[in-house]
Image (cartoon, rainbow, N blue to C red; front, top):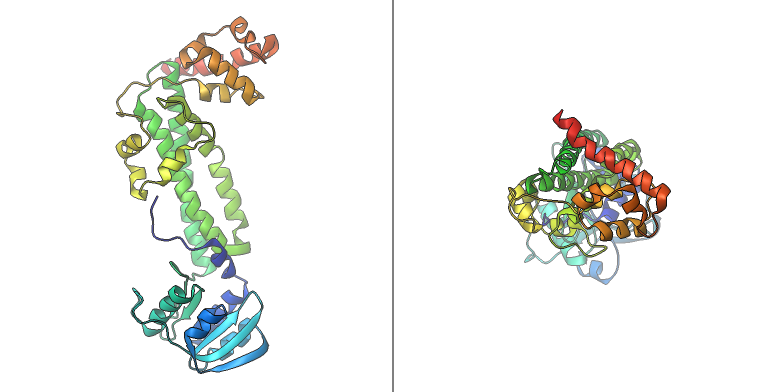
Length: 352
């Protein structure tokens, strides 16, 4: 997909709750002084800096940075080295650099980040303080833990609803496969829901990074809700592609090339995945059916699929037929046939 530039995960971690940079930003907001902090060092920083005073061996703490923010001018810190390098600095970035900001401090911050390649923190001083972090190609607003948890919980609820819909669509596909009633609409529906779940989970991962140590429960819940979704989507894709995908390829590589809004358009998704018309009748290869059999090595599963080549032939295979495949044998053949009988019965039970 092609959204606006994502915020680097490493930068989100540096500003997570409890980190020195985050605590410094929160102190500056509480005291209402505002702040402009360039986080880096070297020749590129020197080029945009004028005046101020250099600090030597000044350990970086949130309290010290907040105190220095009470003065006019900007601050230069190296959080990795744990030092404050300069204060009361007049920053002079290239005024021709594009910025979407309106306030002087935030315009300066965005240009500094573009020109130096280092992150820049800008905290407003009037009214309700706002803290924004800029990188070379992105920006993000520091939100409170309460706000982030609220957003995370909303996304979890959305993922939970979609997971229920996904499970229903997979069950419906299984029933239709058993009755040979599958159209590409059911196939695309499974992959589409998996793609949206994956997209929401990715956004939730970003929030979890912003939350830092406060995100453990959120991450655990998200893992439970998304477990197995991508794997099922990959199996469905292999089952129904007109040409069998190359080993190691992923359906999500094509999906990631789409705009985010295209995920919600089944026809666009079907076209991107080369599935043809949504109303076309479709027959699986049997990949997902065999993948569900417990404790079957991949090499044996591949041999079975090569032998029977289609879902219909696989479902009609007897125990003796299965036992003749290399690596199967009578005992494993009986296990496979028992599992396939359950799959086949799904359509009959649903129609009863």
